[in-house]
Amino acid sequence: MNPESVVLENRSAIVKKWQEAILQTYPKETQKFLKKEKSQFANPVGSIIAKDVEILFDELVKGEDTKKLVSSLDKIIRIRAVQDFQPSHAVGFVLQLKSILRETIGEGVSAELYQLEDRIDAAALVAFDVYSQCRQQIFDIRVKEIRNEYGRLLERANLIKEIPEQQPGI
Image 1 (spheres, rainbow, N blue to C red):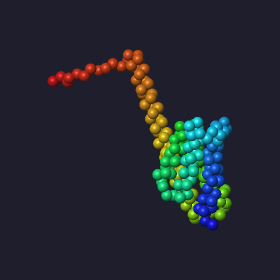
Image 2: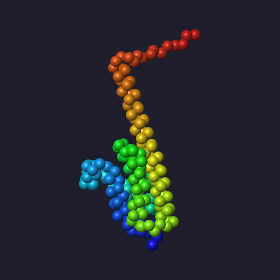
Image 3: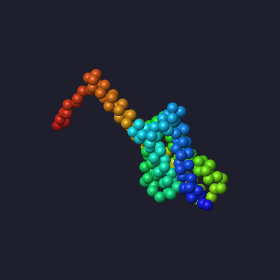
Image 4: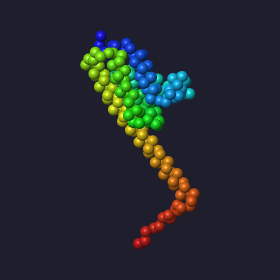
């Protein structure tokens, strides 16, 4: 039996273990909430993790639709970029799938499993790119807010004056 069929046969168990591994990166109280609350409105983080980890897994195994893979990664990474995760923890969940696969399939590694691991490695790199873009966007928003706030303070203190336009003398 080839590794891909074993992986697909054990899809639900692997996805569940992967979701659990992601949830374990959160504090205990948060883990309880994320596991317990099923509503996407009351628990958008848990809902996105549950839904997009499945999509991400399917796209990694099949390797067909890169746009879906990037979209799912983007949703999960955006959440983790805003939270207090170190970059390695924010994107490390992608690489955790490799150990979950080895645990499920066993030590009999073949070329097909290596191809799947290569796709996982590539997805981890894409995840890091997405994380970096999200963090840059957050930084840009913060800088813009500080500039705007500083400008408003100067206006209130009457320290900013309009400079009248003057015609250049000839």
